[in-house]
Image 1 (cartoon, rainbow, N blue to C red):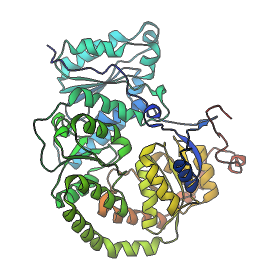
Image 2 (spheres, rainbow, N blue to C red):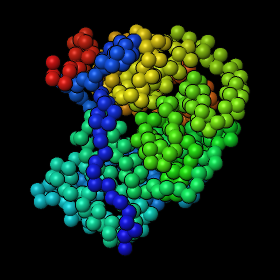
Image 3 (cartoon, rainbow, N blue to C red):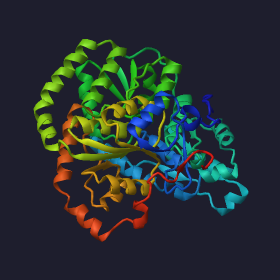
Image 4 (cartoon, rainbow, N blue to C red):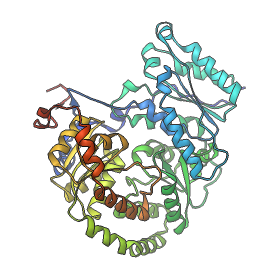
Length: 491
């Protein structure tokens, strides 16, 4: 019954292997920029690590919302528990797109227990795939391995290969055991590795004006509408993938004229695959967030599509349109001190945007480093040479120490670390607010307005710091925040 669909058996290389990524550094932006220039910016490690995130989570995060799909996690039931959170995004996303009725995502667990940890769980995976196919008839089934299936040595690739001979539904295997890497962005690569090698085929013709926009689940519909507006104004049409996309949207990606990404950290692997295998070029700008970044992002697209005149006319018009309100925001925000913490794309883009809005950047935490952001770090090294650069995969004890020392007026980060810093009495602003606009020219103004609101309403965080402090001893705040960062030999 098989249609000779290839099956992924070999895991994707980790980010450490593929891009030389690492997740430990403490210094200044100028210091990091100098080390990158002399090619001596090397990966370090920590002798103590407080927290991180599993790459399997990010693989699921990439594909769970694909239309008419089913997700199977080959692991303990807890490994799929985060799908309930992702399903909130899934439902909100459908609502924002005007879809009705709203459908829940479909996710399943093989529920490995102590018994399977001893005797193996291959039979459970086979049974689960066949049962999901029988009951729900999805267009595609995504299968994710886990730490447990990796430790016990289940031959997941062979099982999926044999199952594919029995059923017509494409089976996409993402081998994403969480212990393989400290750079969880490898989870994105693992998911896209499966998509690229199983779903995509050479298209019959190029679709004029079609632009692949690889966009993660944290980019909301308002941002999509802004990018649609910008691309439409210069004669292009967006094909948003993979979140909320159909199988046909994904397959159509090989026929686009160019690929871009709202977050190149997220979309790097698929963008490279589309270029190398199907000849679809891609832009290398980090994120269209902020005035300068959006200009660069759009000009990179113009270099490939050839519509330079339209793009330059549009950029000038947009600058004129937002100039009055942008001037007012700069006047009110001038001299305020800000700290940014986020993934690569947002951390770099928000740090430069701080300058555009009149802020002084005192520090940036980025979750990992690789070549994708080297140019951005050089830019920060020139704009804010003395600002702290911390590369950390969620190490809240370092953040707490830095915030205590730097005492910024505003802290910009994800929903987790904003909670930590709010307990220190610092006004915070979440930069993954799904219902807000961040990208493009309208995003510049929207972000400035949110910053003003956060600075004008510090009462809650002040009271929170008095009644719910962080758990660290006072002695920790007097120590070097980077004292646990060591070289690979532990020195």
